[in-house]
Image (cartoon, rainbow, N blue to C red; front, side, top):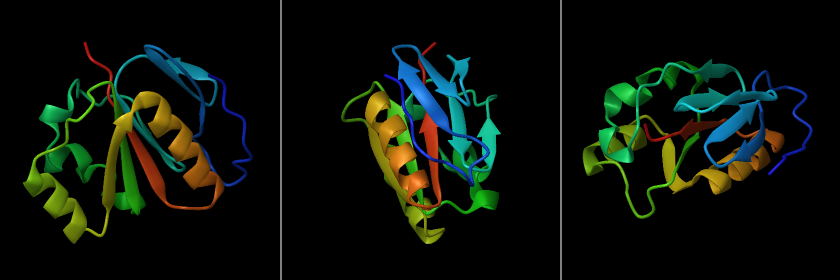
Length: 124
């Protein structure tokens, strides 16, 4: 799937997704990563939603997202309740969805000027 939208104020945009890889600024990545309009973390050693804890999200606090979209191919799996509560205290929402939906939703939110981040999890 190719994505095309106007992201004039964004340094990092998801430009496409195919099974097993995502394109950020047209560069392919096949390992887990975090992307926001002003931040790209490609050394994120997460391979399952079950691994998510506060430390996994601490790197994105500086960009103050209002929502983090977790994209994975683990339907129905969510982080532990304490992680969700911690994010809520930081005033950050979290949504878990499949990878395609996370990439598409990230693009829509960023195009609307929302402070969004996508945490995309690829298995080993």
